[in-house]
View 1 (spheres, one colour):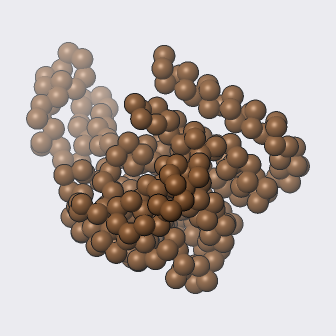
View 2 (cartoon, helix red, strand yellow):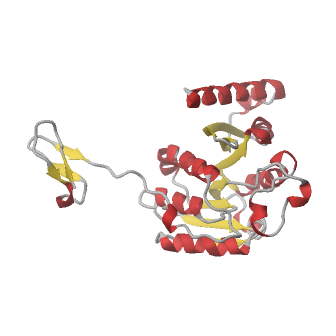
View 3 (tube, helix red, strand yellow):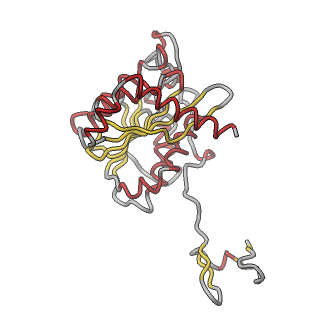
Length: 278
């Protein structure tokens, strides 16, 4: 592969410079490879396991957008709740593994087939994590309480009849009950228990899940939040939220008024949606 390099110079054969550093008479030009994420062609699949889709891509894009902060965060334990195909946890590992050594990665899913598929996806990418079949994180809550530095969740968020929540097979990956909140509302207290003092939590939501209300609930537990990614598709309006513990008690008191908080959140979301459609 040849590259034109500096203006007016001869083409440069990058294959002769595997490090990405190309010597020049006056300086060095650094060619940086983009961060690596899971390759779709290497993601395992099964008819009873949710495949990577717009919500999965939006969550990984949020991690990509926050990658520099994640590296500086220097997490020791990272976890995905509801790993499905393994696309997200594999991408998270690949984003951090060369920059943050010694991280312990975990992934859980209620679907035993999903845990097998996730293991296959991890193996295909040459990375590793502890993959556990569990309801949210039921078998890990006591052992990992206050220890997890990063949690990522793409929950069942689609509004459905309550009887569909927790069904066996692939339906469990999307059936979220009334307003798509039944499973989300069960996950939030578990996340609060698991997160370390410096812990970060990334959550996929729809606008129909009332994300401002979710942020307010977490605010009352002592968490600040922001929208990392907003994405509108033909079928849904996705909002990827990030939460972290806020030690500023004064700001916490100011922002827990329901009406003012929801109003502020709605303005932020509207602004992001306007930018997307420009």
